Amino acid sequence: MSSTVTGQHTPTALIIGASRGLGHAMAAEFLGRGWNVIGTVRDASARTPLHDLADRADGRVTIEHLDIDEPNHLAPLHERLAQRQLDLLFVNAGTTNNEQTPIGAVPTADFVEVMITNALSPMRVIEALEDLVSPTGLIGAMSSGQGSITNNTTAGREVYRGSKAALNMFMRSFASRQAETQRAFVLMAPGWIRTALGGPDAPFTIEESVPLLVDVLLSKLGMPGLAYLDRSGQTVPW
Ligand SMILES: NC(=O)c1ccc[n+]([C@@H]2O[C@H](COP(=O)([O-])OP(=O)(O)OC[C@H]3O[C@@H](n4cnc5c(N)ncnc54)[C@H](OP(=O)(O)O)[C@@H]3O)[C@@H](O)[C@H]2O)c1
Image (cartoon, rainbow, N blue to C red; front, side, top):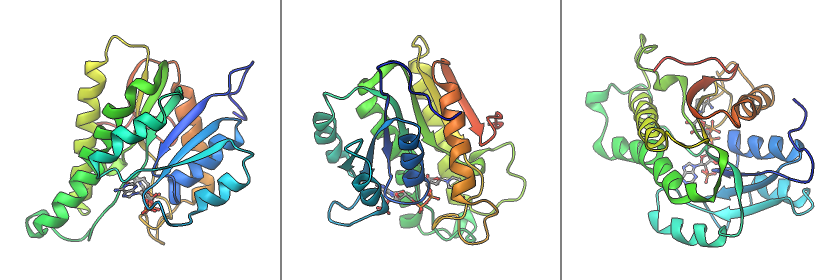
């Protein structure tokens, strides 16, 4: 799919956590397909790859500031975006911790940090901003194959897995509350990708992965209901 822009309507994507890694690459990919992009960065004072993208984008990339773990950032962000209609809202931001520690040995502070950032905060963002999304738009979040309970036969990354499983559950509740709408809801399992979070041993590059993720999201636009999908568009078992 080279572009989704048809007729006069230029669609807009809001990508939460677009400073670097997968979020930045998604912003670039949507821009390349003719979309307008609003991307958020956590640190309002830092220069990021998203700023470089915006410099080359002829005004089609807007940078906003949001730390998803700061609930008091959400109302001002909503106010700043009140005149924009979103075709796609995607929460990419996420984190991990020391992945080898078995769950019983994980310090409470590490557990709380990962669970808040990966499970609670994305849903706060979605619930705070969802009214900006078109009635036929898409609301998504970056989950992980590690969030599949069914597929967890190897352990490891225990808090991270739990946080993404929790995100899946919360998104399922949110989508159930919107069951009568025409909106699409997507939990994305992107595969193991070489980023700061994915590490150097991951088998996939950002460059080969992100066009596939965007293809999957675009294929779900206009398809009501919740899906938990991998990079090929295949359903991941809960
Ligand atoms: N890479 C993989 O193999 C893989 C696999 C499955 C799922 N995922 C998921 O994909 C998403 C992106 O990961 P990545 O691999 O691109 O990692 P990354 O390169 O470490 O990027 C993480 C992104 O999340 C942002 N972020 C983290 N905490 C935030 C907060 N409190 N508020 C706002 N932004 C915050 C970071 O912003 P800053 O620049 O400000 O830190 C950064 O933009 C995550 O949800 C991750 O769990 C990744």
